[in-house]
Length: 146
Image 1 (cartoon, rainbow, N blue to C red):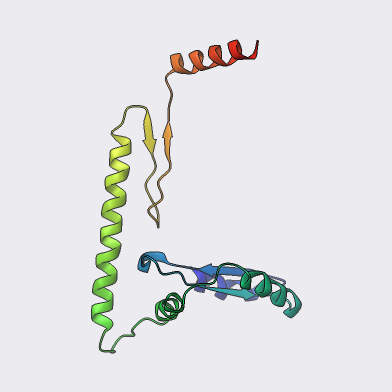
Image 2 (image 1 turned 180 degrees about the vertical axis):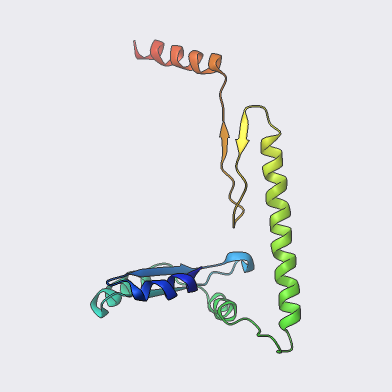
């Protein structure tokens, strides 16, 4: 998606693009790493944004190495490319199965509706309270005000 934005935005005058990248499917427990990319900002603005970003929590060295490897994965023809693709697919499939299991569990509950997880393990179930529960809460709330 980022590449699409970067291809389209140069035709627009005065565009700004700020991207920040962290774990994605390759997140490792205890590892923190990432990078920030700024496009279309003046050098003065870039300097200030980098200064602000640099005072944030610093990632550990191995986390930054991991981020570097993520941004430059094995390429077709390289020795570990096939293994990389197999591991990536296994991780993504596992995440999708677990997200679907959680979604199904929420949706099996009475009064709960959960949208499909998209791109992450974040689910946002909605809870529909029975009308009697809402009325009782309103009544209890109004009796406490007096």
